[in-house]
Image 1 (tube, rainbow, N blue to C red):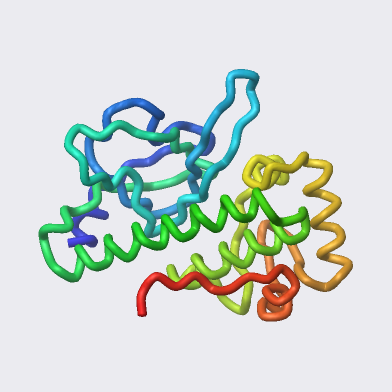
Image 2 (cartoon, one colour):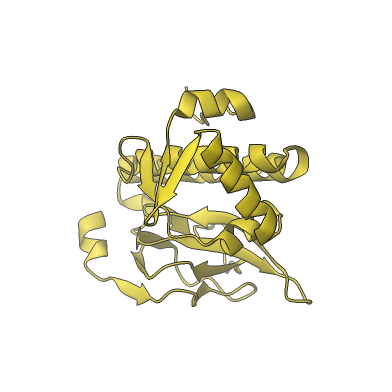
Length: 207
């Protein structure tokens, strides 16, 4: 099912829209390659990256008839996506979609808590641990490291901080031995220790 759907890939280059807020959602999309983000743009040019969309994630899976996109989704790198197969095809696929939606909600709630209650280093550590967790589930992380195609400006837009504050926070985490970020690859040296520092618990949505 998924292999057949993935055979009809659509490409979107970096910084282009995949879906625009307020427009009809024609079909759910499955991200196959690259990174995207759900974005809210303010009238004065500021923006908030609400959540990251990673390979294997769904975009626009809605239960209501004639749904409208509630956020804009933009490509943060070159991406490929396909039309997601109907969950009615099999019980296994329906279960996978349900789990994916539950995880999406859990990570969205984590983002609210991150912005509302954590300081800069806690926000950064919590987000990086979340990305490691998600990419590990997708088979895209190894040895506590993963490719990170984000700029410091993107991290600032995701964490509600200035790029200068992001840079300072990353330098502090490097000096503390928490992370290494070279050549587009980020490594968390001891995820358990960093999780204890920022008070992060792994996300669980099923027993």
